[in-house]
Length: 238
Figure (cartoon, rainbow, N blue to C red):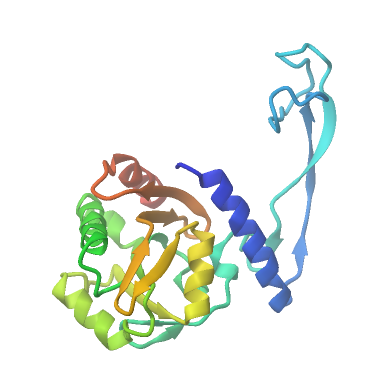
């Protein structure tokens, strides 16, 4: 969850910019909440009037805008607002919105990586192994390549088979260089090409709800994934 608030802020900015490229009517409603006029507790608000627990001043009523929703129910922080083009390992052309409806567990890798990426792949498989079969049908494990020139759909498909990740719950994506960079910015995932065949990059696994909203991130390699699994189970248990 480290840095999740900052990531959501970045996501809002990126998607607000992206929304200029297409027209979707949205509505905004507001609700009244209460906040200390001195903001002793920062941006914290309360549903009911009262006194600030720090300075004892009477709280003031303020308007808090609700999350913007488009006509199809997608919030302004959803990755489904991104209009970049992608190809799956089956060479199917899609947009991220086509993944709507399932909980998404996403990671960015490149198939020629010999250091961190094999461990990220192992972490993804370890997470998948802990999910009951009845929950798997509501899950999509998505691996996004940061090396779209090399990682063609054909190569991604071969990689999926080699790593026993060719079941229906696994998806591999090749995008454009600009689309990959935009998506990485949304995740606060940093990467840089350091040689013709090698990249340095962050190691982050992200969980999105079925509406494409970022819920949780796991950072690092081989870390305890109990919290990640718990989040996934909470999103997929009906």
